[in-house]
Amino acid sequence: MGKAWLATILADPAVELAGVVDLDLGVAGAALADAGVPDVPVGTDTVALAREVGADAVVNVTVPVAHHPVTTAALFAGYPVLGEKPVAPTVAQALSLVAASEVSGQPFVVSQSRRYNAHVDAFRAQARALGDLGSLATEFFKAPHFGGFREEMDHVLLVDMAIHQFDLARFLLDAEPVSVYCEEFNPSWSWYAGAASAAAVFEMSTGARYTFTGSWCAPGLETSWNGAWRLSGARGSALWDGDHDPVVEGAEAGPADDPGEGIAGSLAAFTRFLADGTPLWGEVHDNVLSLAMVEAAVESAATGTRVRLDDVLDRAHAQAVADEQREDVLEVLKGWGSARAALSR
Image (tube, rainbow, N blue to C red):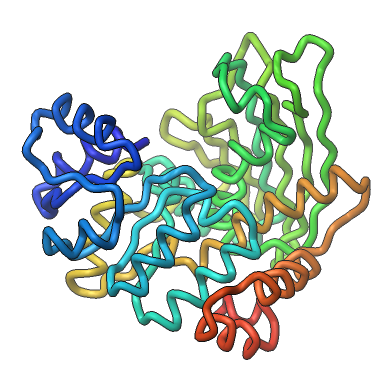
């Protein structure tokens, strides 16, 4: 993803690449050479290099375990941050980042890049035309042989992939998760160590249900990388195969916007926000619930019980308070009546 972001930044005329940070300077230099910009400064410390080159913002494309320390340091050094998903490895760390953004006064935006898709925007316009929404379903079936860490993960489908679909479900339904029941399993032919298949049903705040069914080890007749979607409302239904224009029957949707594509759309939205305050998706307060859906689904699969999202948030809040190292962030965390209320600000 570092190389993908590097190419995206270089292709955007509204931004200038000021520097590249990596713990291995050789890796940073090689990536810049491959991109045709070998003279861009490099460093091993984000804040130090940002100050040295006069950067205006930080794009955090580190591995998830580094999201919290790197983003926290950048925010308190006075830099807005655009970060890769997930916001953090755990909801507790995500809540710490919410508080860090509030204390520092700097925005932190998570790039849920699947929202930046013209087909998604058209599907959302159809959802609004269907009246009261009853159910949204996603089927996600792929058979990638990644090799490496993914094939050793305990909850590979839910943790590595499902956050994309869970986040889109919130976006399409314009609703928040209330509870989930989830089961995960590993087919006999699976090449993954952990559960590569899962089925989950979420109750949403509007009363609608969101159903996710998927597998990382389903060869043949594969869905798109976005999945295959069906939406049912009071006035009709809509279908989206994940790759082409969605179709609707029973209602006429209004025009949809073109939000840009993938991480390029995410970067453009971030820079517009910094320039003039144009509203955008993925600000950290809004994004945490997408990660909480993943954490709740994993807990449900492990316990065999229905899990309330507020319980997940409350436990994460308590953990965030117990773990916090910065007194100013801790004071904010302790002052929240509840995590759910804090995220609604």
